[in-house]
Amino acid sequence: MSWEILEINQPHVAKMISNSMRKGRIAHAYLFEGQKGTGKKEAALLFAKRLFCLTNLYKEPCETCVNCRRIQSGNHPDVHLVTLDGNSIKKQQIEQLQEEFTKTAVESNRKLYIIEHADQMTVQAANSLLKFLEEPSEKTVAILLTEQFHRILPTIVSRCQILSFHPLPTERICAYLQEHGVPRQLAILAARVTNNVEEALRLSQDDWFAQARKIVIQLYEALNSEYVQALLVIQQHWLSHFANKEQMHIGLDLLLYLYKDLLYVLLGEEQHIAYGDCMKQFQRSRFLYSEKQIAQHMKVILQAKARLHTNMNPQLLMEQLVLQLREGSAFV
Ligand SMILES: [Zn+2]
Image (cartoon, rainbow, N blue to C red):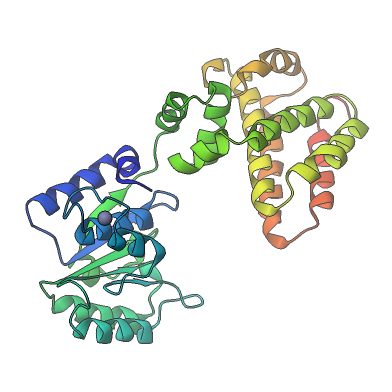
């Protein structure tokens, strides 16, 4: 993530960081809180780069100097990242960090550490950290990251400056993608699949994604005609295109948004639909489904997504889904 992207994604966070750097008022500890995918870790790394950048000290990092590059690759001796050891962050990890920080900074007069999943510190680890935070050093900056703010000890929270990260509105991502030449029909779907601007751009510029969209429409059309047709789409196109779990998630999301569109059409809210070019099919199928049936279809797609985590055979999973999507429709 670049500074420019941070300004688009989390404008208030970018502004807060810029202001404190400019005024020389850098806090000893920050708590970055917000949902997964809102770019907290990337923002923490950008913060570190701003502190250590050799070209633009305290300004937007250059991303090319040796410090920026070492922070990016996790090799800067004065920037430490603590992350989960198994399911938790353990006391020894915090103690190691403290030990590291009693030494003087190797290369500059500053040190910075980032603790990912700070809500998953064991009680002992949290108490060790608390002691550490109670004796702030001028030269030390802590950045704690969490998706579960309410699980952080209040005594820790009170010692941190809190920066909240918000999910980006879909429309804003969509507009950004269109500014970068992505056609609206792909931009709107990519913006729904991911809340990360860079990922959405990469996805929407990939032919794979346009093809994925076509296969999803094909499956939907087959589901509305013959059961065997739908199975053929699965066997001939779906399984080879959505070849791994991550791709399957995207495929099922795209299918989910298609049924959601159908619901919009039924409710007379066509302005929200993502598959604008399928309007004719939707108009036809509006007589085939009730709102309740569409809601049921969306539910089984979500269940299939959940089943991806159980390592179920993908072919079996999709065939079951097709069967469930046929059930209760006007054809059975
Ligand atoms: Zn730099």
